Image 1 (tube, rainbow, N blue to C red):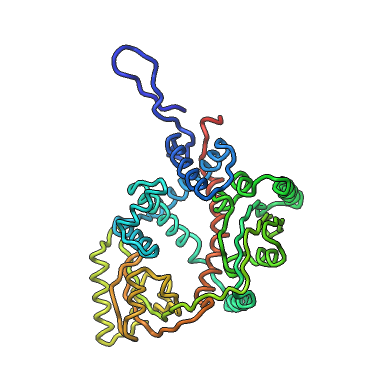
Image 2: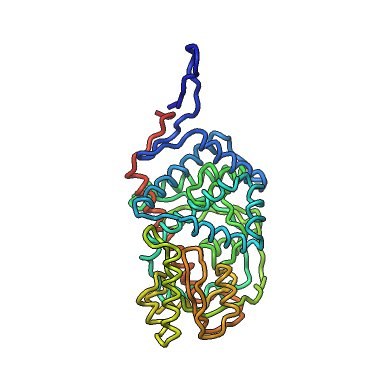
Length: 413
């Protein structure tokens, strides 16, 4: 469906300005938008020496991803999720700090990856919006038992020091699939494995066939500790040699993995940790950043005059830890936003500090203790397990959202 305009003056043939490549409910995706996204991806993949499939196939995969992203943003809009300018600036500052850069230097660095300052900030806004959508739609309803955390930590301790560099291809089995459908997916996985073993580059196959978030990165997961891999992947990788490929059956998918690297007995450095309580308030369309800041200052004053931090947190905090009196438990200082990290490292015990800017609003905190240790904390394990369960539920929900949406591809009609 071309978008055309007539030229001024004498009658001439129309000039095509752009072309609609997808209709997503009441919105469109144009050829120019698709071309820009494909060019960015090609630049990134080429820089990492990833074998590429034909451009037409790559464009089709990118377009499918853009359609899903547009559906997510439309749903987020219906929920009233908005990422304001101040929240965007805080997130950019946090990214710069984590990369040990000033904001101007960070903005200059992203231009080397094909972004303009405007396009990078827009991409960051999209990522923050979807992160908030995942949190509201799925993550808050996911629970993890104490037994699951204990078992996870025991498994992580048993494999302490092991790291693997793995690439994956995911071929999902629909939830309601019968045995015949499952066999069909298995046959597809076996055929794809044979192609890879016959010489087809793994990254090219991942881009072409995999149905997971890492597909357009050639399936690469990068270096990961055992705690950040599926248990099935760890069990397989322990007996694999570098370069080997293996087919793994899961409950809801078949996976093909490739072991690209292995490091055993690598002990991690000691990490600074702090035991914290927090009270978080978030700005919104009706609550300004200034109002949030002043409210937190007032709550801080009430605590200073004798009210219990936990009581105030339960009554007013908008963070996930509010039901626990704002108790975050032991957290890695390096994983906190810059202002919070500095306070967690320096604030005197049982003193309330802040308000501090975070990715999602502002917070006041109380430091209950500090320590240095290696390994994973119970809270980190719980968050990781919640993320795993939440991601699996979110993928299924997203497929339902896609099935119920009006999506049309004019060029394929």
